[in-house]
Amino acid sequence: MDLVFNHLIQRETPQPIIKIGTPWQCIPIKNDKQARDTTEVHMSHQGINELQQFEKFMNLEVVWLNGNNLKSIKGIENNFRIKQLYLQENKISTLDGMDNLKHLETLSLFNNELRNLEKNLETIKLFPSLKQLDLFNNPLAEEPYYRNRVISALPQLQLLDRHVITVQERIKVDKWYKDFKSDVKIKKKSNKSKLLPSQIFSKGENLLYKEVADIKNQREQALKNELEMEKTRIKAKEKTFDPNKLPTNELKEQLNRRRKEDPLSVITEWEKGRLKKIFKSYDKEKKASITQDKLQGIYQDLVQDVANIGKVPAIDFEEFKKIMVEDPLPWDTFCFNLNNVIFQKAPDDILETKINDKYREFNRKLNIGKKAEAKEYMFEVMKLEAARDMTEHKLPPPKIIDNSVKRTDFYNFDKYKFKNTFKDESTYKL
Image (tube, rainbow, N blue to C red; front, side):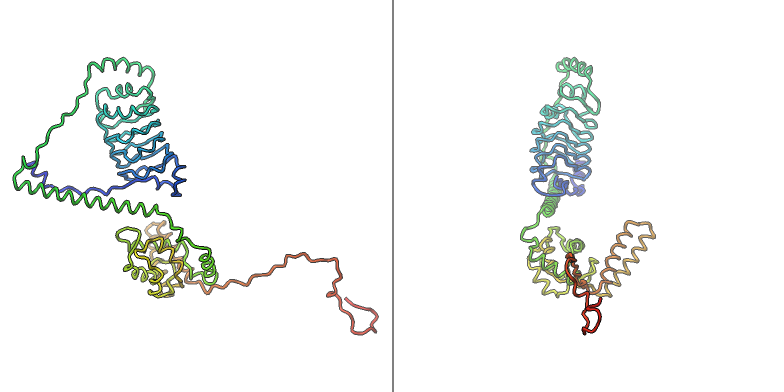
């Protein structure tokens, strides 16, 4: 009773956040055609707990999922073309969801938590093309006659636990299996009925039990909220740009004209990437969007050049707010509307202060041996110095080059000059 009571009042440690793995993160271009053409994905050592969004990757043949935290294989049921599946070094305890993988040739499941060899063999028997199987370092590998039972159940298997199955070994297993069927009986675990808490606890202990249940429910709810936020982040990453938010030809001409007149008035794509850090700092809920009440803070950061791009808005906050009218304001809309914001060179005092600070950080990182970080600071200093030293931009007048071929088959009168009087001996002179 004391052990049960102590177990109830003990507070559990918080469970880790569930990380969802999707094959979209393995392809550079995220569209349906690229998904259909993908035959191999590598998702190893990423701490994945759950698999999702494999439906459009219908032609997958090789899948690497080793070194994660998977407990089951749910999520790849419809990818029946998979031939090689690497699931070693996970926490898999069941093979449910693999019934449709009829073309499986290689299955690696070592270093997992699989139990009950007889039950799992019923699932593995569904793979008629299976040639290579790894099950070592699982609890089921400790069962009696493990290797013989697997070889007998899978006549098509050629390699078990990285050891070749020879013809002589298969003959011995066939002889052994005839005796094994009659002698060995696999024991099944008996299901013991559990007593209700009200039958074993007092009134005070029931209150503690209820409190523990409430805490578990709160943690489960918090875990569900985290999962929803993770799904929202994944959808935001896979979201494609709205065609209405792509630059039109008229906008492109306007940007090119502004860029020729004054390069500092237009923000580049690299500089937009620098501003993304500021946008994320105001997106506390990680929904890839911000509300209008946070727009004032972003504008102040742009005026102070927090992103170190050497440019600041040339308009006041009211005009800036008229441009960013959507509420909530997603990142892609914010990024697109920046094309309509006129920028100018940051004040010299701000640039000088930032340059001096960056130089100090550069020297400090260099002195402690962090050359990679020092290199990043040097790049930022070079960018700020270029913005500081940039003067008014004027294009040189275009040079007119005459590439026409001059004729030489006519008399060039410009080369000769006639004399003013006829008293001269010669009619003309050179």
